[in-house]
Length: 194
Image (tube, rainbow, N blue to C red; front, side):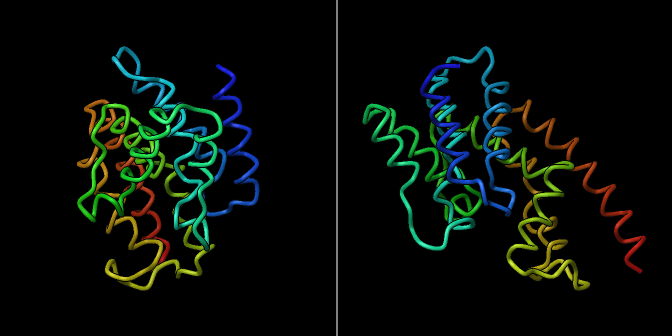
């Protein structure tokens, strides 16, 4: 692992040490590792992928109360303006909210990081992150609806749609398997909910 990626890891850890919504250091590392796997045997810039994966949530509205420029500041200090622009284009356009606004990632690097991030919202980790985020934001667990702001509704409003939004076929296959696991979890949840 090169020195720049190690610096990015340290920087992310420093700025997410108290993060409890599931957008923490460990999330960034998982996204990075999955992105590296998805990028295998593809003609891509691995440094751009690594930096976008590691820095992508530092300035996310879900985890900060006031605007910050942590990712941009890191990139300005440690990379060329070309790399900074490529990474920021990915970070600024990869979220589900960006998708809903009609924004997309344009590069293969961006598509890889986006898929890796979406995969971390699925499966057992995705379930845990959903409840961590919902608890932090004061959301109810469930309120007999899929159309409200509860943790369970989030599965139906967003998470179960992510497999169709994957850019790469290999990510779509992983997503479908993780969603099946989540559906089994919800079957048991509803049996116990009574």
